[in-house]
Image (cartoon, rainbow, N blue to C red):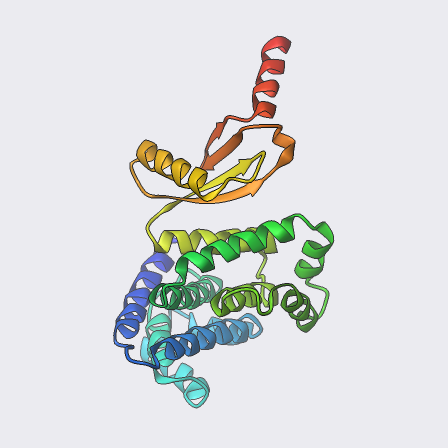
Length: 278
């Protein structure tokens, strides 16, 4: 998600209000309240994605914030909980660079809500890993990727296909995030979208993500040693996302941001061929 300066400021203010509400959500029903807040924010994303005139009216900077808030509450006060309305009031009162970026911001808030819920439930690591692994599974099946990403097909059919793949096998938060992505990709590919979600979960833990391709499966001890080594090299915590790729013939490739560390046999052979050709 790329936002212009005004939208970044608007999102930061809305996130602050969101986290204030989240911090005040405590007790035995807190997890359910956060789930409802995230679901309702996602529902508003769906509504505004299908209503261009409404999202333009709510993001219209030339009108008074009070007018936009009145429009919001007049339409949705009886459909949403008060915490959701409080977050959205902050959203519509802010100045956004455009209606699309406002909707992007609401989607970001929904994701943050669910990741905070996972963090509170002690499930953030599991959700991150499930999102990454689901993305790898789909990336390895081109037909499945096309079926889940085809905007010309009914979204209910895409959700049913996804449910058949993950129902009962992943955390409820993972499923909600994946369901929303499939239902409303908003120009994103399913594999890239899942990768972005996994990275957001890692960022929530203030860790960078190392995408590792290994010629063989790495056991827990090997992953721990690699994670410790990368953490020492980069002077910050590193989260591993490991994918097995037998085509490497041996060794592994590590990608952190734009930096690639190629220790694979295939990579060394390719370098040797370049040297010879040169």
